[in-house]
Image 1 (cartoon, rainbow, N blue to C red):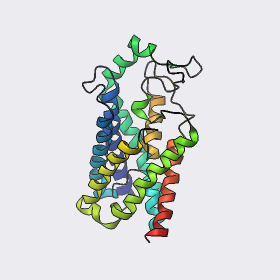
Image 2: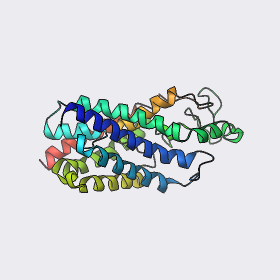
Image 3: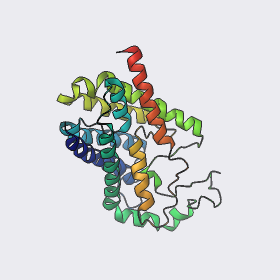
Image 4: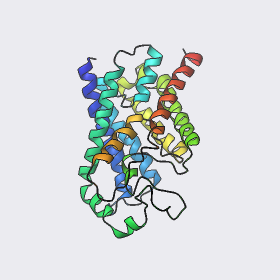
Length: 263
């Protein structure tokens, strides 16, 4: 695979991943959406199908990695780091494009939601303002969760460990069963990985919203900070390092475990 093919495949595949994954978050969150309040099951299956679609689309061009944690894990397994920057560049660009397309798709719903008096009254959109009803600050405002992850209990150590553990499971599964041993060529590896993403969301996603992918969080968070959304609140950059660092650490751990136990 040439660098050009890798970059194009990862950009398009990651854009589809974030469009569908962020799209289900928007569908469940925003007023005037037919899927409003559909719940956690809808979100977890939506993200699983998002991985399925994005990876199948990119598979022929780049292998459909779509995740820097996966790319790093594979590089640790194979020892080949030469194309890692190309993968990461395409993944970040694709994540930003996908997040922008979520905004375009739900433009009317974003406007209705963020100008609704009940929505605004129920959120602390000012990080320096008073605490919310449950006694905690909400520095992200009422729609940041459409774009990026956030913890239910804000504890940096716990939040980081959650992301590390969940990503280690994902990457170790891929290194031992998925994309790097030929199964992806007939689609089975991609299908199994997509089902695992659903499982991780159901089992390990409750504490932090399971980023398990640095660009899945960082790219949309950047877009959220740039979009002209009224009353959107801050982008919670104080938390943003956790869904980036956690998955990277998890990928390194998975690569180490693979070499110790399976190589």
